[in-house]
Length: 131
Image (cartoon, rainbow, N blue to C red):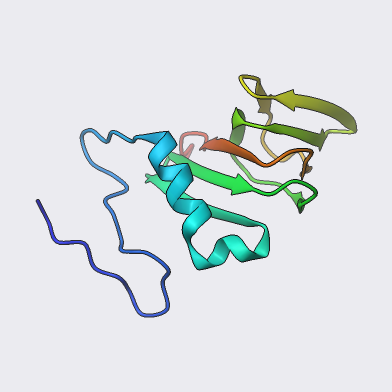
């Protein structure tokens, strides 16, 4: 197993984010996010998978914390693992309790407000290169 190294200025050791197979204990990952220094700001994230066409990011966020407007060129899915979120996307408001999944098309602006302490998976799928 390769040795994990902590890059200068990073909060955690680097872990493999691509390969033929990856497996994660999401409950353990969420607990770890809430114990890191960055959690003091009200949210903390970790990229679990990073490929040229797919990214999966785990985020833990405290109640009453906002992630201000974002958008991306890839199609998104938000899967709420814990808590409850409110999202605005494409001019609509969505209530997202634990167990709910929302898919947002590419280029759509969105923001997130944590109604409760929450954790979610953000999956980004980029379109195939058409060139």
